Image (cartoon, rainbow, N blue to C red):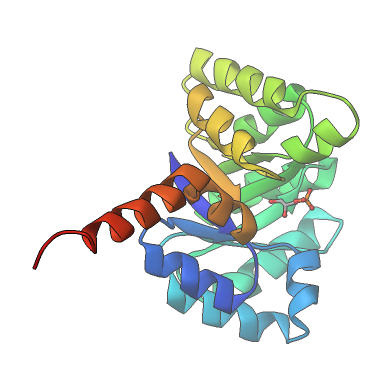
Length: 214
Ligand code: G3P
């Protein structure tokens, strides 16, 4: 499974990329707003830090403005992928962009029917938001399972990005289901790799090493 980092913070991206396990980046307007810097400047910097896809979201609500924004964003770097909301106009925009060979990440997906239409429109990626479904007492991971089944039934090429990840179990379950990608906040990446028994084990080995006669 590929791991993307879900942030617009360049310090977090730098630290995660240095681990050698990051395949791409996803941003959204809320994440970029936290950085208090111009959007284009932040995206340009991020695109230079990773070789893989960097998702940047449009804010237009009709297909024509989404396509216009997409073309402007695409100029920033070759690895920009256009994030399009899963609304009716978004589906139209995805079809138009796929005909122009502009890659899309269809975001705010909360149902399998939405995911089916995104794939039919030619989406490169689909982003089911599992944490937000869990928040309203629906099992987000069930959505990932159903999308995986339907995409498999028809050999859709659209890749599933498990998004709105809130904890390490979300990532583990995404991998168990065979999701293509999980996009993970920096704090959860850190949680994924730490274990108290590893830390105490390292300490015990260091303490015992000191007892070895020199
Ligand atoms: O990848 C989508 C993500 O940024 C949304 O996460 O935690 O706001 O639901 P969250």
